[in-house]
Length: 124
Image 1 (cartoon, rainbow, N blue to C red):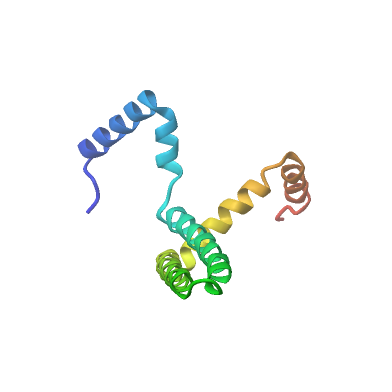
Image 2: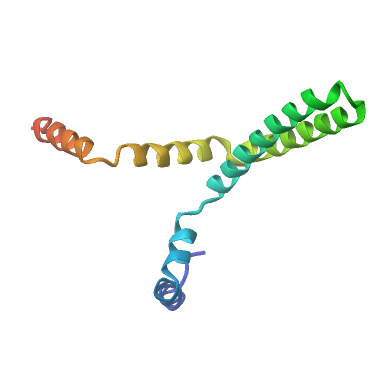
């Protein structure tokens, strides 16, 4: 159900007051998505997996119990990775890749090339 005009006006006033009171927080809230949050957890779980793998290699020969702890941590980080990858889905991966591409292409040379291409590819 869409918001009424009164509700939209109140929401707009709340947004404006948030931007005025704490612009850094407002920018962070505006730019944060569920996909980025899940992507961040995927990266952290992959790093924990690699660290647990290294831990397992170094401790397995001296203590079977410590090696088993490394395997359990690897398993848990794999589960966290799989859950967050499923949460992201294809739409999340596309969103993250789009944000990386927009950062990479935000340079003046690329903008100039797009302008030139647009200038010479006119529709008749």
